[in-house]
Image (cartoon, rainbow, N blue to C red; front, side):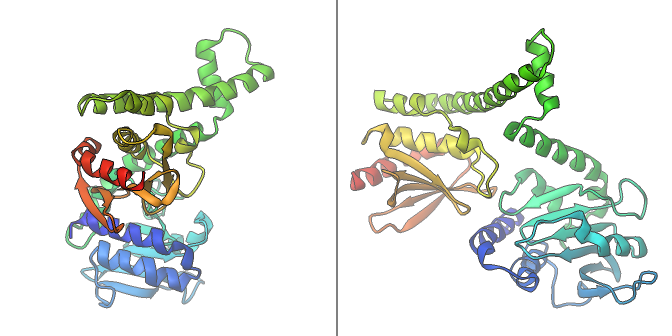
Length: 360
């Protein structure tokens, strides 16, 4: 199994089981140990590779333990501190990591609740763990650009120098991406003022601030919507000709603001929306556009007829690097078809229309 597939398999497990895991020990058994063994490739039962409850006396703090230490050639390379999966990770949870980082040879430390993995090093001061992670991996919303960096920590591809050298760029690029996403969700005064000053010549009064806060939020959402629709039109232009109903499906339902929201645990991606629009356009050869709906979940994005989960048309499994289009037969048995591009959905147009026709 390829590295990206191993991460994808664990991400699916996390999405399916997260609600059932309530304690720290359960988090370790269900998510942390599989990440160390299945994803990174270390033998969790070999003390020469993985030491659980790793102890190193630190000043007056005697007998404190870090949950796991990953070893190479007899030296500690990575320290891991675990918290329950239902808890939000805070830097205050990393007190042992801070102390151990200074007295061991470790250059990397990980704070995790099994769902989110925060990776730390010593960019700010030698042998002193940074207060902010240089890389954050969320298994409920995997950023594919981070996978090559995570792979450098695996047993078969361990390359500490490479990941340390890339850490500064990863730290700031990741932080900037999260900051931009936060501004799209809820524009700050500085963000609003930045754009207002470029389109409005008057004074930035309280009334103007309130007016442009709503306008900047609306413009941001419309910008994303138009970007998605432009890409969709390009994709459709390369596919089969559209009927009037299919054109209506694309034109009449731009990406809704709720689909672009990142405020919930379920994150609907722009690519899922594009793929949904393609499935909808294909389906409109059989039924009216308004009957094709969608529901997103942690496991997959569903395209339904009449907003009825008993009438699934297709399922989009886009949470891993390898994307799958799930299609169901008359017995509702799903077959996953790997696709490299959402344009490949057109090759399954006949199967999609058959599914709609069965329910209609």
